[in-house]
Amino acid sequence: MRREAIKRAVELGSGLGYVFLATADADGLPHIAASRKLTYEPDGAIGINEWFCPGTLANLQINPRISVVVWDPQSDTGYQILGNCEKVEDISVMDGLSPELEKKAPLPQVERRILVRVDEVIRFSHAPHSDVEE
Image (cartoon, rainbow, N blue to C red; front, top):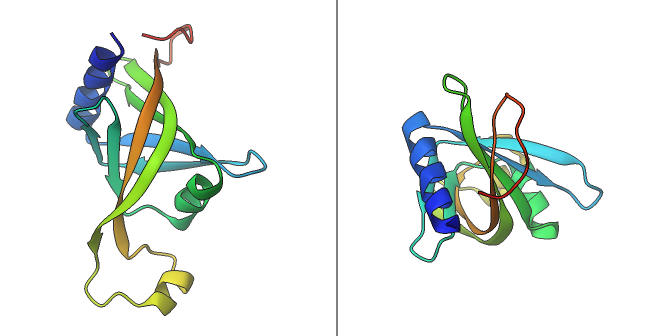
């Protein structure tokens, strides 16, 4: 059942063209990011591609827990995918990458893919809902 729920969430996110992901640092300070691409992996994991800001990546280095929210406000249907970051891969680099700018510039120079091992998929909506796994 979990794989079917993951597939439904990925399908909804693909149709919407955006998802939100939440990470936290070692002190529990949350950070929210957005992505345009969510993929279903054959082993039941999900992939999230984006030019992620440094805060997201720094958090995942020290705290691999992640929450991904896929929500359609028009129909008020959605999912929260809870899991662990298994790895972060570089998938695209801007032409002329400069290590000095990577450390200073506010804009990311590398598109990355976060691979998430899914632990739970729960419903997400504005309306009252329970946090029971799908």
